[in-house]
Amino acid sequence: MNPLSFSWIFGIIFTVFVVYFIIKFFTPPNQKGIKNEQAAAKNYPTIDVTLDDVRMAIRKFSECLPKGVYRTILVKDDHSIDFHQLAPILGGIPTKKFYMSKETYDLFEEDERHIPPAMDMVQKAVDLYVEERKEFPILSYDPQRRVNYYQLLREKYLKAAPEIQFYITELDGLITHNRPEKKGTSQS
Image (tube, rainbow, N blue to C red; front, side, top):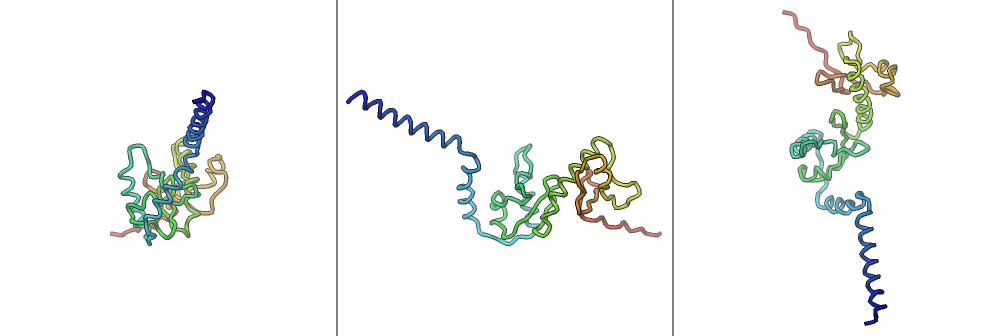
């Protein structure tokens, strides 16, 4: 065999390996998993689920997460829930989208999809305000504990006030969009 042809064959083999490793190691991870996600999604039927079904599936999913990993891994950038990870628990992929706040873990249906981004923005502002001032941004005489957007805007914790009114709950300073029920007064 001619030494020139040996080096030529070796060069071709070497080039093939280099190209293979470049493709393998420099392909972005999101492109690598697309085929796997599509294949996994095909195995699950589309199903109708309720908000409570989704809530229970997320709780069950959270119980299996390693320490330090939070359920926010289920939330996409648009706050919709990635049901490919919940499909084994639910037994399928829901026909409609659900949304989740990354800060409070509150769940929402399609018609309330605008709430999670605003909720996360306000919750972060409230957390920073409380961290620095050691008090909630509410008016002392407000029994509903409405988030005072004026205080948050004035101190530049918020850039703009959301159109939704949020309330500070008694639970660790988390906010909610649900107006608190009036506490009944009983006469004895």
